[in-house]
Structures are given as C-alpha cells and as structure tokens.
Length: 313
Image (tube, rainbow, N blue to C red; front, side, top):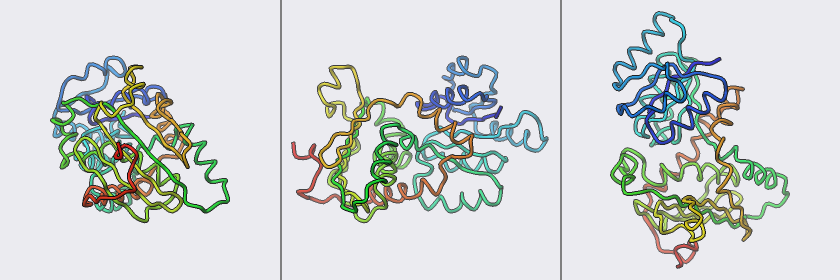
C-alpha cells in the first residue's frame, strides 16, 4: 500500500483523485487546502491529517522526512490552483516524494526545466494527468490512425463545450495570471490529445479569444484542426441541454463524427493504475502541449475564412 499527501483537497477535481487513491488500494495521510470545506474526507480517508496553511503542512512533511517517520507519503497529489502547481511540485520533491500533478503541470512551459533538474537532484519523479490518452474511444482512434499507411493530412474539427456559471469567472479559474486562461485551464487536455493523435504542431492561428470561448486552427504533422472551446452554456447543443447534459466533446475526422462525451467516469483511477505500475505520464509527455498553449495564449487574433463551423453561425 502506498501513502499519499494531497494539496487542493477542497477543489473541484480532488474527489476524482480521492476515489482513485482508494480504489487502487492506497491511503491518504495528509492534505492541504486554505478552505476547510473538506467533509468529503470522511467518505474516503477520515484519518488523514488536514492543514489549512502551507507552512504547517510543509513542516509536517519535513518532520516525517527528517525523522524517517512512518508512514511517510510516497506520492503527493497536486490538485491546487494552476499557479500553485510549481510550488507544490517543488515541495514534494524537496521532501522526498514523487508527484501526481493535475493539468497543467505549470502555466509557463519554461518552468519545466528547473523541475527536471530538481527531479534529477532528488531522484524523484513528476507525473501528470493526461487522462484522454486512456479514453477507450480515443485509444481505438489512435490505433486506427497509427495503422494507416497514408501520410495525407486529415481534416479535423474539435469541439469542447462545458457549462460554467458566473462563479468561474470570479474565481482563480477566470484570472489568466492564475489559471493560464481558457486555452490552458480547459483546453490543455485537448491540445495534448491532438498532438498525441496527429503529431507535432507546425502552424497555429487564433480566430477568437474571449474569457469564455476561444477558437482557432492548428496544422499538425498529420492533420489540420479547427478547434473551439467554450464555457458558455448557450453554446451547448439543444439536445444536450434537453437531456440534462452540460458537457459536449466531439471530434470529426474527415467529416465523420467521433463523439466522446461519455466514458470519463474512471479515467483518473486508470491513470493511478498505470502510474503505480510504472507507466505514468512524464514532464516530457506534457511539454509539447504546454508550449503550444503558451503560443496560443499570446497570439494575436486574425481574420480567416478557414474557421470552426461555430464561428460561421
């Protein structure tokens, strides 16, 4: 059994990690969050030590490290706001703990270089969560693409819409300095997916850049991708809203729809299973999409006829 610490345990994504830790037969022994609405711990790990200040949490971990006390965390799961990921990764490495960090690893890709150096110095490893690479539909799509002999560039349309209320824009998620903006906070998984499926980026244009929606086109080694991201509920297809579903994920490949809104229930558990078996996703896996998103965030919007279908409405 492995022992875990966690930062950001009161956050939106933390329950998926708590479930994954439990379902893989492991335990949480320490957690940090400045907010104390963490009653969810009673459903998973009521015995975990809980801290509301970084300083006390850091001292606790350092005490365990220096005294060689048991149990000590084998992993730290980082679910804190994006701008804190770098700090919490460093804390884990300095206190002798491997890391499982939610997306994005960092907001600015150049910060990865010093983390790689710290990995080498401490002998510890940083893993990240790229769960779309484990989605059954997308695994099957990649296998099909890899088996094809054709080198023709495919035509791809990626659409991701999810409902977020007004709270989103007043929280840290709506602050680009803290979240990296919509392309980083919402889009990073999808840009990683596109590069995983179709190869490295060669050219990018941004056609729309608003706090609640973005769109553009990417030219990858094996695909030209028109993409659209939105947290505006009104963008959702009427049939989705009528069915009470408030997320829509779609890829069309040469005009053929590959809808993958379902199948997300246990992806974090699969991430943990693979990681604990020695097959986690590394900094090297995460770097290309982080660099791509940095370019998208800082690009000027351009006018083009080659836009996502939603921009033609």
